[in-house]
Length: 205
Image (cartoon, rainbow, N blue to C red):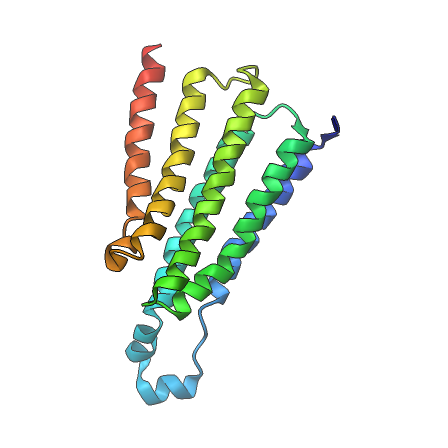
């Protein structure tokens, strides 16, 4: 078994850079209109045509931010980074890097089912590796770094929430396509209840 230990600060810095680059690339997918087109069609009409692009930007930006916050929250409990944790992290980052492409693909075929399902697959994959990372860190650290049983359960519940909602959205895209596009809002709503529930549980301990 490979027992190599990697520099935690370098790994975290690299992850932060990947998240920030991916978020920045999202806005670059919104085409900047030529001034002649603006002059010909008017500002509002040009912006109206880019509404799907702005929707894709907003959804992907805040979901990516949610995963970045989750990544920061769980990695603070990591004492050392071994090969297994490093590769789980790399796979998570791969799907983060893929997100600007899947967002552009979804926005380009905004009313089509296939591009949206692919977009949901991308986000579900991020959620999956986030969940695997949380589980592995809980098992690896065994409460040694302040990650108590309740805190571990809270992190797992949060990570499962995102994973299951995006899987559900991907399935619903083929059944109720309009509703599927709005179901991601449940991630933020359910997270509020998860946080409140475990906050009260932790306080009562």
